[in-house]
Figure (cartoon, rainbow, N blue to C red):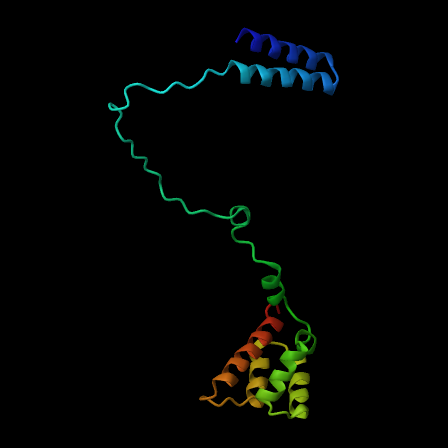
Length: 164
């Protein structure tokens, strides 16, 4: 132990004097070597029968990822982009959505679809846009595919008027 004390004092002194990194590393290695040599070998205990079994109770802990711990309520980029206000329904609508809306809601009638889109782009409020859309879109109650497409269309419409 005395040798370890001497080495740590030497390391502190050399650090204050601004010794080179190599010299400091060498002292650090000497400390490590001394620690390895000075370790006492582990001797087995003689009274093994007297030992009692110890039961450790570890509380159940839910493991959270680092991302969950740092930003638990921050929505990801795709969520934020979906809820941004759109200036035009035509620009907010992708080519696949346009095709699905045209075929499912208008049975391929592009003229009716374009007319409705023009009126919706000029609507001032969501209620006004909703009444325009309800005039053009007729939903069959038993057609589940059509109901899903209508909901998707109204979600797009809501994002257009979300911050107006």
